[in-house]
Image (cartoon, rainbow, N blue to C red; front, top):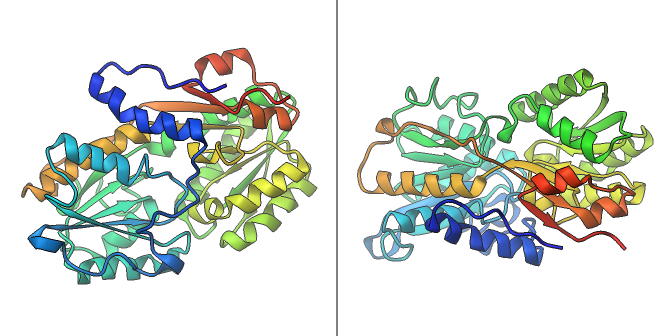
Length: 357
């Protein structure tokens, strides 16, 4: 069973969501890097100025756990709504650290060397690296939770003069209480939640701590397992299996980069996985509560167009994304021995997978 997203109010918004609904129906996963993504964290793709005199836009990702519908595709859509077309009005080059955050500074440097007109940073770690190294280049950020922790400013209107962008506090759940409530709804017998997190990523630690607090208030305990890179995720997940956790949540680019190992091990242990990334629901997670990244990408694209037209980022306030979404995979829930409550299915913006036979 696949139910499309609720009809938005505006026709333009309906068009924006067509690609997303199709991707969910077909089970497109975000783990496959785009053709322009760099292999091994190298800055392939950001190697030259825009062709034909067109301005170069360098889009840089910390990791590839968000699908292109919420990254470059949504940004391109926002650009088109601002009457700017790729290949005609600008050139787009994409690179990715693929979860190896130590390579982010070199990707930022490569964009600067290529004389990028604007650098688009996806995810908090990328913005943090850009704040430190790209002080003279306009920056538009997206797909992140806290630009202030990255040093980009102190408020939506008081920020560094070369930076603007879109963010969602706590990825749609500032105190992580809604994620805990979702787990309790779908796993009513849960007593212990396992959390994979990346200790080298400040935001990941913050989310882990907030979820621990929210879980305790809800009468649940938390077992936290640190992961330094994608190769550690499988073993960390198995350690949570040994500690008899009833569900697993994950935070941080390193943890998401190892999702394939996580879900394989979790399925062996029959432990349901919850994620802030909706595309990971298509890869085996049971449910995801997340901001409307599609809306955020379009807004970021419009900001990018304004900057390319000559407007200073200093005059463009940060955009706080407040709309949230819920996607549920009934089939994966059934495989874990769970039945998703009807009220959760009714509230979900998308239901995929169908009931397990």
